[in-house]
Length: 162
Ligand SMILES: [Zn+2]
Ligand SMILES: [Zn+2]
Image (cartoon, rainbow, N blue to C red; front, side, top):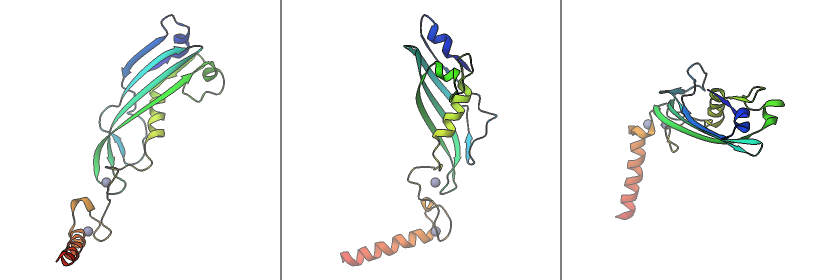
């Protein structure tokens, strides 16, 4: 998906928006991260003086392996970024994936944003308790060693209360 930013700045209407599926199937992602369905992106571009303001939203339906408990879970990541794009972006050293004619490669931009915004450790939930240090099973699943710890605490509590 190519967005003609320069053309839009010079056009009469000065806005463009739409939804698309960024082409990401051939891309490499960090270990433990897979797309379980195509990503979806929405863009909104509006002229702002000599520049164009771009709003990009990306939804990534992912299948990840949790870094802490190693469980495979479905997680949806949503990213939203705003850019202000002007002539300097397609004449000088471009930071964005944009060519000399002011054409922005939205697929490439989506890919870069996903890599940039993915958390450095992928977790099934932000408060994942990881694996039991004794038996190596997920704490959440309730292994017997974890339950014993709980029972001990409970019996101490019972003693205190009696
Ligand atoms: Zn986990
Ligand atoms: Zn255990």
